[in-house]
Length: 464
Image (cartoon, rainbow, N blue to C red):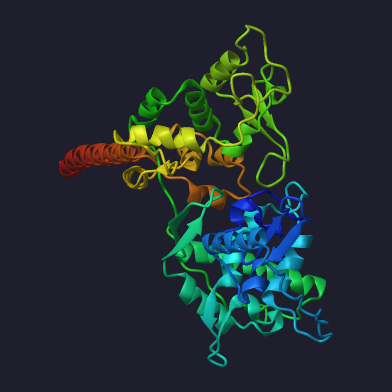
């Protein structure tokens, strides 16, 4: 499928989507119909004889072409003779990725992978490395897929692990700098690369995967610090006091059910069973593709019963979204509202967004980074608070939809209040044991004293 969107005639013919044009490696085209003339299609790279990446540079060339067309001096570049691909030409890493994304399907929905799934792969194939085998500098995408070694992967790790700034253009053509790379980003790319190679081995495109040798993994991921952010004492009340009603209800239900953000935004009223006090999540809504039934706590039930009544005083229909807009339509995302709530909770009083660039100001981004709260942290807060209040860990595992209890154990973090309570219980139990031992020794000593006196009287009687 090609993306065709008017942009003064400047566009790309690829499946990357308009928002990705500034980052994808494909060529720019001018598709334009001059007044009174036939439609013109010019490949910018062919016209200038080199590959043009920046949109701004391509736009300047478009202006040059249009000027020549109006002046009657434009002549189309000669078409290059078609090249016949070699039968035994090796498959590059770029080509292998194209085959993978054409065949891969989302395990949960069965649909093709979204364009956002291609993002990190595009970073991979565009990264230049020095191959340890021959010292040649090349992009990862140009390396034959069967010739990739674990040493090439390690070379990519070293390059991409260093954070670096790149110039990016948004959908409106505005250019700005953005940070790329880092250990976490590298780990995600390695995960996708490994999946592509494993798939290629299964379908026969590759004989072996460079990520394993003799069945043993030879490429290690960078260590990542497990996230353990929980709400501080009184922080939830602060968020609820700041948030508008729809966000307030969403936050409180997230903490009361441990559901994921996507699960809540996709929730419809037919899934809320007030008679049994349950929320029935469909398999297509959950992360692991399995249906799940979540019991409703009293506070969650109270919120949902209130939300069920629409602005007109009538109950919403079964197919209306629980956390939709005022008329029940689905909200695709809550990024803007959630960002505003966090900034207010962080005490930020400056300008939130640049009115010209329509992005957060540098001061707002810094405050957001300092506050360091994500919506997914509410899920950790929910599960951890369940444990704080004495819920069986196996029940918490079911609430969190984890495959194993070990995952739940790593995921949770007791609050300081709960830790102090447990420490207090330990002190009480130890004090009870100490008191019991003291009482036991006292009774034993008194028994020995009584026995000794009786023995003395008995001996005296015998002597008499």
